[in-house]
Image (cartoon, rainbow, N blue to C red; front, side):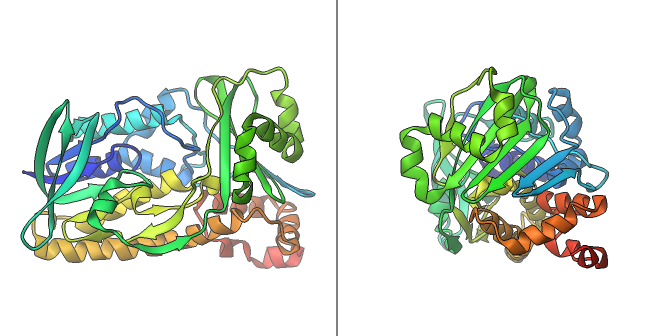
Length: 393
C-alpha cells in the first residue's frame, strides 16, 4: 500500500509527489503520457514559480537547458509603454519560459530522484472506495495489464479535464464563462524580451524560450473562435501586425519552426479541492484563462500548500480530513484575487481609468517595477496605490 497516489506528472503532479516523498511518504505517480513530451501551454514561469524551483533545488537544472532568463519586460497599450523588470521575490528577479517537454522532464526526474515510483503511459479508469465511500486507491491499465493500487490519499493532478475530479464528483464551486481563444507558435532567431501588447479585442505576447526560439502568442475574444479557426494562420499574423507592429516586423523573413497550436476551451473555474481520501492540485482543481500565464506558478503554490497542510497526518484519516479542509480553504484564499484579475484582463477591454493609472506608472521606475510584480503575481494591485502614484496622477 502506498501513502499517496498522484495521478498526473506534470507541473502540479511531480512537485506534489516529490514533496510528499521528501516528507518521508511512499508515493506512486502515474501519467498517461510518456516523457519527455509536450503539452498545450504558454509555459511562462513567473518569479514566484522560479522561487519555488529554487527552493526545491531544481532551478539550476532548468537553467542548464539553455532557457534564457526573462529579466526585462515591455508592456504596450495605447500611448503607454512600460519597460523595466520586476523587483522579484526571494532573490529571483527573472522569470523563465522553458518548453514543457523540458520543464516537465526536470520535474519528473526530480520526483523520481527523491524516491517517487513513476509509471508513465499508464491510464486510470476508476477509483477504489471502501464501504463508507472513501477513496482508497485507483484501478487502471499499465503496459497492457490491468492493475489496482491502494493508498491513504489519491491526488488528481491530471489537468483541466481531470478524470480524477470527475470520478470523485468534485463540484464546481465557481464557474465563469470562457473569455478568450488563443493561438501560438515558435519563431527562430527573433530577438525579444518578455513582451506584452494590448489593444481592444486583442492581446499579443512574445517570450524567449529554449533553443533560440521565441514563443509568439495571440489572444482573441471567445466570440471570434469559429471565425478565427477557419483561417487561423491569417488571423494569427494579422493579430500580431495590428497589435504589435514592431514585433511583426521582426518576424519578417524569419522561420516559424512549428505549426500553430491553440484552443478555444479556456475554462474559468474552481472545483471542490478535496474530500474523503482525495485532493486536487493544479488545473484539476482550479483553471483560468492563460492570458496572465499564472498556471504553472499557481500549480507549484498548490503543491506546496497541500503538502504543508498534510504534514505528518497522511496516514491518520481522523487528522487527514481536517488537514484537507484547511488546504481547500487556503487554496481558495490564495488564488481568488489572481482569478479575478485574470478574468478582468481576459475581457480584452481598455478603460480610460486604467490608462490614466498606467500613464502615471510609466513616469516612475519604482512604480513600473511594482507593476511588473503585479503581473508576476508577487503583489496585489493595491501595492500601486502609493502617495507617489497619487501625486503623479
